[in-house]
Length: 197
Image (cartoon, rainbow, N blue to C red; front, side, top):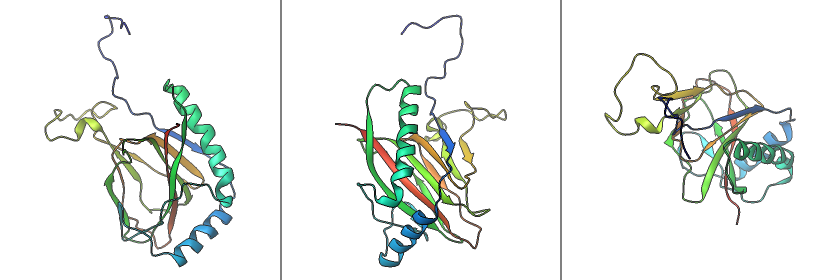
């Protein structure tokens, strides 16, 4: 690609974040997640004190409408970034964070996964934002400090989640969830998309 040399700055390493609100009845999905939690001890991945289910690769009935909407958004996302391959669901799982629970910094990049996301079923006030870390600042002293914070100089981006909303983001993007300060459970569904074969 040929660039106009009159332009001084190019945003060549940007990370696209897609956020949308849905109008879904979450009650059946929440009931299913709570039922799974009762019958499963869960697993430890990035979660600290919270519960995370095993992963699923086939969409179960209570989540079919949700994944129909997510699939539409995934296609909007890849159209927007001019990605020329199709993506399919790789896996999904459930998270329940209670008072004091949080998620350590992590990413979802495992070689096949290229797009990650989270759907918020229940988000009590003060139950923890999701915070994304800029790839530019992952190495010590990789970039000079600045007091003028913008998309090039900020090391983190904090997103305040809302119930019935979801996010899509590149799987390589490091992120974490702040500790919950709520006495009510925060319930989310995490998922990954990979290149279709």
